[in-house]
Each structure stands twice: as structure tokens, then as C-alpha cells.
Length: 278
Image (cartoon, one colour):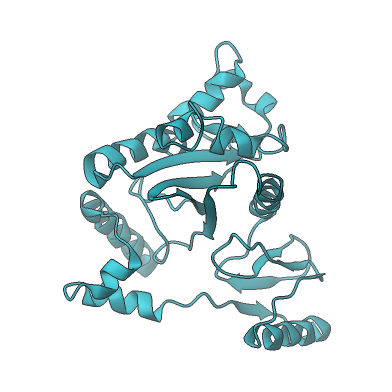
């Protein structure tokens, strides 16, 4: 317990120290920079490989995962849904497949962490949105999604000890990039609009203006709430849905057909980088 506390204390103050020095750089720039030996080696060693830990009595699941492993190693992507384990593909995601493990009696541990049910729902919703908008909004743009890794491995921002948004989404049009940090995050126990994860949509604009200084790259942050708006409407004096949009909060189950639109082209940011007609 003492060692765990010391590690947490060290990570907190390391992140606090490093936060003002964060830079936006491409992977190739890091690999080509002779002064980036440590980070370059980290990138070369980085692998997105899944490690599953489960009870050895689950014979059929162990057999199934062995078959899936062999298919993936052979370059054959596959989908699977059994024993509370779901594997699915999303071509816009930067690695395949994505894995969801449902809550239940079957105890399966996946590293990197499997998607929870809300993260899985977001991926399915975004996939459906991309299919609908392939010849519309996305006709002249590229969209990429990345499930962020966990503490110590993923991309973080120092906000109350470290904020690791669950997903990073890029929209690219020509030489312009708009980067969204998205977090499916329940709000029932949040500190209203003063919650650090919600206020991060302001912090990220400060980072963009003060540290990024690249007119072709803009940053944005949104909370995708599985909590229904009716459960937290008291946050807004007028119970006005616009108050939540102004604070970059959308509700994935209240507006399942529209919350992706609210983020990617309904929030007004897209006009700033030429993603929407003025």
C-alpha cells in the first residue's frame, strides 16, 4: 500500500512538472530527432497487443481465443460475440479489433483495458454515423479514432492529477486537423459544470492558443454522458439543454441519433477550421 501511494504521489508531481512542456509533434518527427532517443525507443517498442487473463476452466473460450489469435496473426480480421466477450472491427479505428467484455459472472481481464458498455456503444454509434456520412460530411475529409491507453501509457493532461480521455478523434481536411478528446463519462456524481473533466473543454483551448501555436491544428474536448439529462438538469438554472452544449456535454442515450452531429458539426467549432460551410 505504501509503495502504491509513493508511486501515485510521484506520478502526480511528474505530470504537474511536465504539463507546461507538452508539445504537439508527429511520430515521424520524434523518430527523426536525435535528441528524442528515449521517446523514439518508447514508440518503437509500443505494441497494441491484447493479453487476456481468465479462469483455466473456461475451456471453450480459451479455444475460441486461440483460433481468433491465429486468424489475426494471419491478417484475417474477425468478429466474435460469445461468453460475454465481443470483438468487432471499425475501419476508422487505428487498430483492430476492439474488444468489449460485458459485466457478469465470467471474469476476464483484458490488457489494454477492454471497452465498457458505454465506450462500446459510442464506437458503434460513430461507426453508423461514418457510414451515413460517407458521401456527405465526410466526403472530403478523413476521420480516425484511437482508444487512448491507460495511466502511464496513454496521452494525458494534467487536470486534478491527470486526465486520460478515453478516445482521441481526428478529422483531417487538406492540411487542417481538428483533434477531439472524447470521454464517455457518467455525470451523476460529478461536481456540476465545475467538474475538471467538463472544464477541460476550456483548458484545451488554452493549450491550443498558448502552446500549440499552429493555425492548422485545433483542439476540442467533449464529455459524452451515459447519464440521462433529466438526472442532472438541476445543474442548469433554466434546465436549458443549450447550457450543456455550451459546456461541451452531450447525452448518448437521450439523443442516440444526434449526439455525434452535435459534437462534430453542431458545436460551432467545425466552422473555425473550414469543416462546415459558413
